Amino acid sequence: MTLPTVRLFLLGGTITMTKAPGENKALTSSSGVVPVVNADDLCRAVPGLDQVARLVARTDHMIASGNLNFQHAFDLAAEIQQTAQTGDTDGFVIIQGTDTLEEMAFILDCLLDIRQPVVVTGAMRSPAELSADGPANIMAAVTCAACKAIGRAGVVVVMNDEIHSAAFVTKAHTASIGAFQSPNIGPIGHLAEGQPYLLSVPVQGPKFALSASADIPKVALIKAAFGDDAFLLNMVEKSDCQGLVIEAFGAGHLPESYLAALDNMTGKIPVILCSRTGAGHIYQHTYGYKGAEMDLIRRGMVPSGIYNGLQSRLLLTLLLMSGASHNEIEKTFVI
Ligand code: ASP
Image: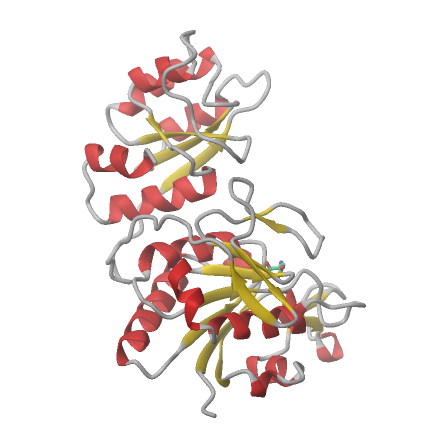
């Protein structure tokens, strides 16, 4: 039987991290773990992986995921999109640090328009820890990438034997191996006895055919807080950012201290209203007081629908890159 071909791209993260040999001072300033294990060694450490797929593994980067940026995502998306079109690959796996994994998965989901599975994974525990979860996550991710049906779900995140949609998943714990959750819909599938089961297929989000070399606009993300006098918002107002996302209270509410700066900004740049709660829709027609969603929308803020702050920042960045009008921005967010 011919095995499916799966291409694996390693970007770094805890899954690659162990103590640097000889306390290499170029890699670390302390005795903590740093990226060391490359893609080939990672795959060799997973017994039976070569029975699941013909793996083509590549080490692209060995960095903590907080250092990944839009350029990395665009480069990866361009390569996957092109490779998928040649038809010689059945599925793709991206391995990276979990800290920004949800954002990479979300951007890839917006940029890729292919039928093959694309699976993002990582590990919460380094190879040096007891019960490291990296090998099991790699096995599960490659198994899902080798399964044609998973391609129907868009980009997915596979961790802890759960399959999550890139459109909904978020890292919700600092350490748990079950850190990845999808608050609005739950996992869309799981693995049982090593087999992937896709239980639901989420609605597909917007797609962008953008090139890697386009300029990346600056979009600020701020979060409202108790007793907030808007000092951060006032600093952003003076900046040269091209878009702003505000994580507001509850269903989309801000203190009155925000209103003057907002009035100055909404006519100039898109300002997205999302919730700091992490789940549920932004309201549009319920609360009427100053600073509530009806007032904020009237003042020109764009409700984010169900997108959280991190997702809204990415989506607005892509919309600005694609030259979207205010009307198109509003339509994309209100889902
Ligand atoms: N700091 C690490 C990173 O995001 C954590 C991880 O891999 O989970 O690269």
